[in-house]
Image 1 (cartoon, rainbow, N blue to C red):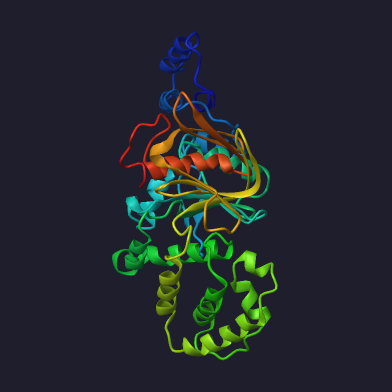
Image 2: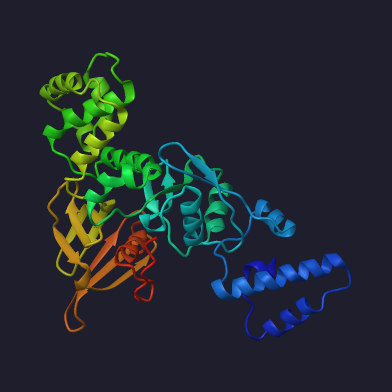
Length: 373
């Protein structure tokens, strides 16, 4: 257990390795010594775990077997994956791309779905899978309140490429469509009031087909983005939804999905990873309840549901990013006169991982062409 979790200090290492290399007689001891050598090598390379093991992991270590969590997608699929003591999020993301037959260049990877807060946040690339699994299991929230979600963490810098996905990556299109609809309902893809009748009518056609059902405020409102659900939308929107619903009859689900995608790819913040309800502090100003958006082009700050940014940091103007628990810092400019912006909010520190994926650099700011899978 010690060899699997804690790298020994330089003073103790020779003694530890001596005892591993000279086990008591017997086949069982020799097998255990081989496991210790392997675990010791891994923990020396990757560093110690942040959380202690739970009984399930202890049994797996003793048996020499992996723990087998599950990853979900928003379209309802689930896949089991194997995780040993020091398996990282990056390694599992790569394995799941193969399991789901998703290209490594797609940007898909493991995220955390928090059902209590109804938010999805990317997981740090170098985090240990079982640190999270053990924490959620101890809280009795694994696969209920907290799930490993396999989804695209940052979208393409060219949204039009998504329109080709049914032909280029047909298996990828279905989970991607559900993710886009989820982001739409969260209000993270900014649509106009005039777009709502078409969006609602197409979603109803996907759900019900050509079946006739009354179009009411109660049936339309759940299909709309949260910011529109919270307001009393005009009755004209309901009327136009009913008329549009008649127009789209006869369309297949695939045709409706492509129509929605054609509409949404033109909208602001499509292709962004958005962190909501963020507080911002600069040298001169403080802003409350903003949005932080990370894209392939840079980082922007928005008022909630506003398409025009309050401030935009192109990648080539960002000199450093820093993060710790629930805090993300962006520094731009130069060493003589830099501009420091501090963002605080739930899981906003994970913006650093998305920033590095979008810029394709590692934690030491070295360019890594294959960092974005």
